[in-house]
Length: 344
Image 1 (spheres, rainbow, N blue to C red):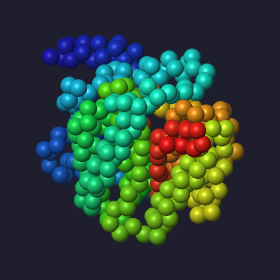
Image 2 (tube, helix red, strand yellow; image 1 turned 90 degrees about the vertical axis):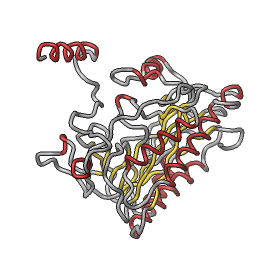
Image 3 (cartoon, helix red, strand yellow; image 1 turned 135 degrees about the vertical axis):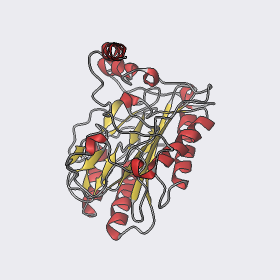
Image 4 (cartoon, one colour; image 1 turned 180 degrees about the vertical axis):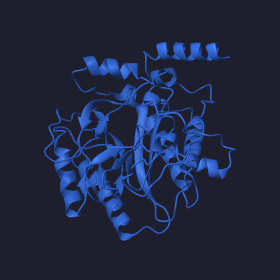
């Protein structure tokens, strides 16, 4: 009845501290997997009523959030938090003044950091193999989720500050944090799949790749190849003694040579027992990143490269970052470990 319904909402509001987390996607965005195609492909509520898109891509509804079906999977602290808050990260951000150094005990052995990264590679491979014209990004989410379950891993994006899916799928003008939905991938699309796996040992491994689907035009090939080359150029600099801010100069030079730009809003980050931690690793030129690389540092390098301007905006789902001019974007990412004379 109505009073009970209102009471439930009041309780939820109290639990949420008076409001949902700023990243919580709005209502009216999902429907069952057995719904008819017309409903599945309809616009979510936030995109209706004359919403202004920067490019041609349009979202569809998404499936209900997938469940953790493997009892052996270890969950990070945010997995069950009503707001998806990573309290361990928030505590770390407030008190941490140095970059963590990982040693052999944390890097080696079953379920440790190197293992988490290897599982991420396998899961990303599974997602990439499932791509094709007519496949939905929701199907990619299903494949990634089940591949993580099979490897006793938690898909790190799931419920991270209420992100509703197990993987990020970023199509065409989407820079990052695209939410998988019922839209079918089309011939000529470029699709980034961003996977992070959390092992039973309590470590995250993060990587992504951008894939060609069908017949991609010359500009599509140019931005994807440039993104790959930017990552490779940056990785060549990773060794003890390199300042973190130096990576941006090399990435900028390679992007500019190919008439592309480098996104400034999002950056690489430290990773390991926490999904995101120090250091910040900007990808653009003349950044002011602090810190010098040392053996045992673990972080991601993940330059996001645009065909047009580097400016970005965020869709009304509070997650999907797109290019402001609607032109395409591409990205590649690795989690890297600083070694004696380079990186792994």
